[in-house]
Length: 483
Image 1 (tube, rainbow, N blue to C red):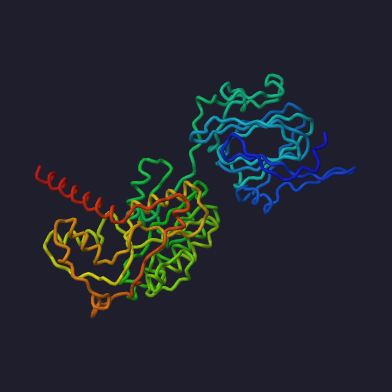
Image 2: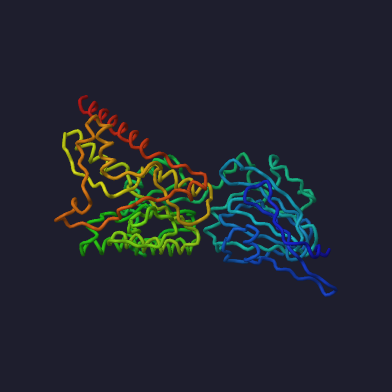
């Protein structure tokens, strides 16, 4: 039976998320037919993921009624018929709300279907001498078979209406023995790896992903990013995302010979190792950037502003951004004035207020605080919403303020007079000290990330809540000590 000729190339969604059926143009005459079975540029334009096939397999089936499946493999598949005709059946065996969803269709050479990792695939031949082809994005191995998820072809819940009843079809003994849906362990999603898990942002990411089995956390002791051999020793096929919260952030120390070397090693060389790994294994890389990649002379710094770093730290962050941007699937999250769990400016000011100290604080550097819980929430939003890849500014929202303004507000919230804080210029504050140059304006516009549906919290509100939480934690700790 000849395929239908001259259909336009088209994509049709199905009830299973990520499973898409494609109509393929087939050109024929008295000699036979020809088709472009998979044409990357055209398929990407239709929305097919750039899934990176590495192996092409063909299943030849001599007789009509040959039935294979239901197998869910740990890779993506693009399936088509080379010759003949099949009845295809697909069941979602992935962990999640669509588990158990079913889609069936007859396919001839004028159609193809994309099957994401974890969706069970089965087919029954409707003609003799049918050839069924697969493009897959991982190499088959005996070890990989241990990661398959199977479903019985006769499962009553899926209730697949096989054109040729299974008792008259050709099945393997293995396929007959597969479990029913109630006994299937769903295929877990690929894992997310959070690096720098002991830092301020790393701790916030631990809280944001608390209890999620598919998220792993690593400190430098667990995985040395500056060592290519350490990265090469990990099985990256099991990961979909790397969140790089690891960084050298000692701005002033970076100006010393030892600090310069350390900053370049962690902020650039390690990022290059990660970028190579992410690109090779088609992993999404989330990388944290900084306002220090700019010189602070503009009124605000949009995502596409050219780099203009002033000091070594800013130079290494700019270089790291450039490297991370090479990864096809990347989010560069640019932030400023980070506050989280651990030593930071707000806690220092609160401690000074409690002790009655009257500090001099810089009043000509302007920006907005960014609390780590909001950075973590923004990262999660970008990943889960599948926002377009690229660079996103992410700070808290609200009116710009100087460090002195923030210090005064901390004093007020701590029950101390705001005028205990004296404002001084950056030049005055660092006179006679070994210090890195700093951008005077760190304002990062938030329009781009807001357009994805994420609304950053107000910085002033977060500051009040942060101080209230710190005070409550301090009282609780003191009470435990008294007990």
